[in-house]
Image (tube, rainbow, N blue to C red; front, top):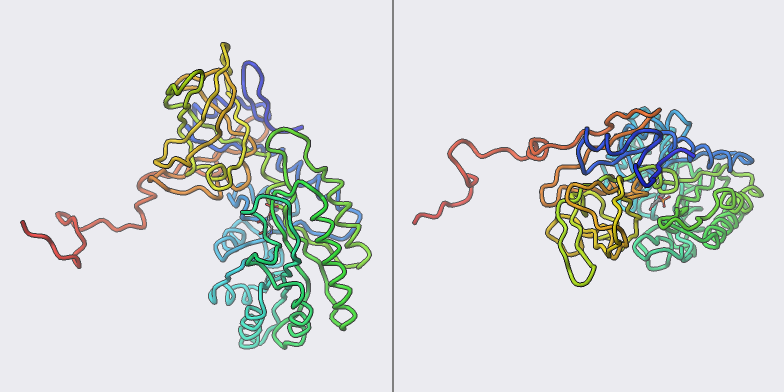
Length: 430
Ligand SMILES: Cc1ncc(COP(=O)(O)O)c(C=O)c1O
C-alpha cells in the first residue's frame, strides 16, 4: 500500500524521508502521497464498475490544484460548492461537463456563471433556487441542467456538525415536498431536470444511513418516473467515512454494493461525491515542537507550530487525529496534550496522548490530515497558510508554497507614508 510509514527510527512517505522534507520545506507542512490518492480513487472506481457511474470528487475536502490534476488524470469529475471552487476546477483543467455545483446558498452571480458555463448539473437546493435558475436560463435562451437536492430526513449517525440530511438541517428540499417541486421544475422551459441529489452527512462509519438514503432516493426516482419525469442520474453525494484511530473502517466494496443494490434497478447512472474517503488518509501535517510545559504528574503540554489555523478539525468538531513522532525517542511515556500556538483554548491538536515526551525541535506527524485540513486553514493570528508538498516516486515538489506576510497584506493597501489612520477617521489631538 502506498502512503505513510512510521517505524522506530523514521517516518517516510512512499520512500521519501519526512524529516528531510520538513527540514527542506519547513513546518507546518502538509505532505501528500500521490500514489495513495491514485490508489484510493481507483479502488472506489473499481468498486462501482458494475454500473454506469462517475465520481465527482468533492472539492470542499481539498482543492489544492496539484491534487486536482492527479484526480482529473485519473478520470474524476468534481463537485463544487462555490464559484471559487468552480473557478479553481476550471483552471485545473476540468471541463464544465465534469462539474456538478452544490451549495445551500448560491449567489445570483454564481448562478449566472453556472448557467452560462453549462455545467453537468446544478444541484438546486430549493424551489426558489429552481425558479431563479429558470429565469436566468430563459433570459439566455438555454435550458440549464439541474438536479434537485432532496432532504430525506435520515440521520447520518455522524458528528452533528457534519450531518446534513435531517429535517432540521438547512440542506435540500424536504422529501415530502420534493415530488411536487420536481414536477414543477420539469415543466419549466429553462430547466432540464436530469437528476435527484442527496447527501446526508460526512464521515459516515455505518452503512445503514447509506442504504436508507440510496433506497429512498431510488424509490423517489421511481415515483417521478410514474409522474412522467425521466431522469438521467441519481447523485448520492459523498460521506463515506475513514478510520482516524486505526480501527477497521467501512469497506469500500461494501459501500459500493450498498449504493448499487438500490440504484442498479432504476437503470439510472450513479454519481457520487466523495471527498474525505479519497484524500483523507493521503496526507500528514508535519509540525515542530516549540515548547514543552509540565502540568501535574506526568502530564505535559507539548506546544507545536501547527494549530487550528492549519488543522481546524479538532477545534471545530473535537476530531481525533493520530499523532506520530517522526523520529521517536526512547524513554518513559508521558501524557501529552499536544496544543497549537494560537491564542485560543480550543486550539488543540490532540489531548491526552501517551507518548515518549518530545523535546523542543522534534517533528510530529498528524495523520489522516488530507481532507478538511488545508482546505479549512485560515490566517487567524496572521498565520501564513502552510506549504504543501506532494510526494511522487520517492521525491517531492511543493504544490503550494508557504504564504508570506506580503501575501497576507497584498489585499490591504498601506497607509500613505507618514499616515497611520485612514484619512476618513478624525485624528485625536492631545
Ligand atoms: C453535498 C456534498 N457532497 C459531498 C460532500 C463530501 O463529503 P465527504 O467528504 O464526507 O465525502 C459534502 C461534504 O459535506 C457535501 O456537502
